[in-house]
Image 1: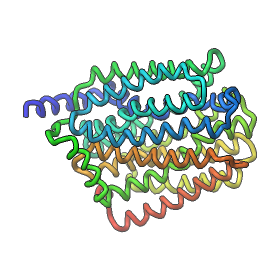
Image 2 (image 1 turned 45 degrees about the vertical axis):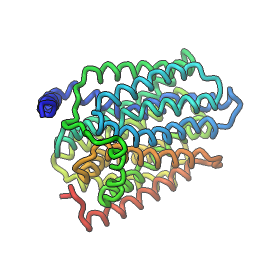
Image 3 (image 1 turned 180 degrees about the vertical axis):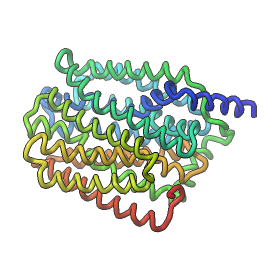
Image 4 (image 1 turned 120 degrees about the vertical axis):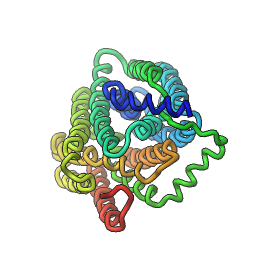
Amino acid sequence: MAFKQQTNVSNHKLRNNLKMTVPLLALLSAFPPLTTDMILPAIPSLAKSWNVSLSLVNLNLVFFFVTYGLFLLFYGPISDRFGRRRPLLVGIAVYIVTSLLGAFVSSAPMLIGIRILQAAGAAAGSSISMAMTKDIFIGQERERILAYIAVIMGLAPMLAPIIGGWILLYLSWHWIFLMEAFMGIVAMFGVLRFPETLPVISEAPLSQVMNTYGRLLLNPSYMIMVLVMSVSFFPLFSFIAGSSAIYINEFGLSEQKYSYFFAFNALALMIGAFSCLRLIRSVNSKHLMTIGFAGVFLGGIFLLFMGQHGPWSFALPMFMVSFSLGLSRPPSNHLVLEQVDRDIGSASSMLIFTYFAFGAVSMWFISLEWADKIPVLGTTAAGCGALVLAAWVIIQKRGVKGIA
């Protein structure tokens, strides 16, 4: 009981100290885009220097997200059993060590192997940080904080490829891994200063804690919302894996110019999240989600009809897709978490695992040897947008907890 009272006091302080709380939660959540996007400008040149196919080098992204997703399922129950801080510190330590080792890889298989180990550590950040958000904040305040975090997180995919492009211009791609190790060290110091946020640490055996996934799978409202929200992000992951080939190989841009176009797309995510933050005070969340899903569909249609005429004719429809995802993601994540009252760490892990499981499939799909990836990406965005929008209309009619 004393521990619970102490944690409640700490969480109250964290709610009143958003300048400390929100940046750290955003940094922990941003491990995936920071880790994957920084190396994107180097992928075409790595394929040439190692004399391997682009699809083989792109497997470093696919295997990263597969491993990342699997370890998310591990960290969630562990954080419910042992608290948030200890597994988070272990995961960040693994990430730092493997990032340092990444600076010494010399082949595509070695790169893929390091990415697998890196993902095992990075997975602690996203799942546990979302659980910490649920620990600390409640109701509309949590929805607002998730929007704040999404705005800050938008900087990660916007800056990461630019940093990678400039590193390639003045140094070598090996320094990208050293930069990622430095990011991990910053996160480590932040977590060391952060108190434990879990009010009640479970005394149940670990094997019993892992059974929480069975309860989640039997929660239909939770699982339906998880699947719907995950499908909506399918085109974004396809863009991440296919963007370097599209901008560098198809449009003939330099690595630096590609990084700016990629940052432009990331800016769309951030503007979408910021718009959500501003609009959520006066517009119902369900309407924002409807607008967002419809925007993904329309962006896909525009990609199909105008995306092949040049870098800007491709970038602008993709901007619409990403803006729409940024607009809908904070209320979507909030609504998913509203479907559960316990096993929060496991629920957060299952949500993010499903995001990245779908993401790994979409990255593999777009990395196939397509003659032109742009129509494939446009069809993906239009199809997923239409599917999610239709599912969302049905969900609202049937009623789900948290929809006003």
